[in-house]
Image 1: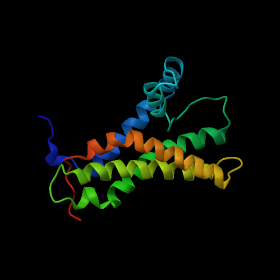
Image 2 (image 1 turned 90 degrees about the vertical axis):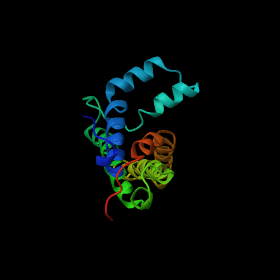
Image 3 (image 1 turned 135 degrees about the horizontal axis):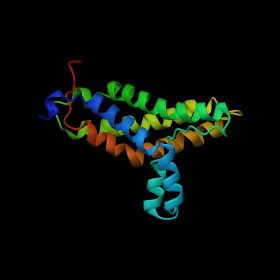
Length: 163
């Protein structure tokens, strides 16, 4: 028997969706595939490449700092998505399950998580700058804007908790 929406929490479902997005589309195998088989000058190719933004690697040719920063971005994206899903009131205070506020709360949490994950990881780069932090936060927020609707859909219909 499949579990219905009665047992699904909105923050839990959104966090699981974020984890799956990072795990699958941030993998080195997907990144290699999308780099070799898509054109960045088309809308579809751009979006498929954008899915690989919070990538994680096992490449031994990179410095330890670059590996940690890249992996930290992916880890922070999932953790901050969970945090923002709990903090944003749309998924918690909606009067009925499946309302549009749950969708927008899930989407917004992924936008915020992407921006803040990129901003925080910029601090660990070799020569961090304020401009670099702003550029990274902008790219993270753009990722959240164009991919976050998936997390928003995952939060729809979820149990909102007893806050």
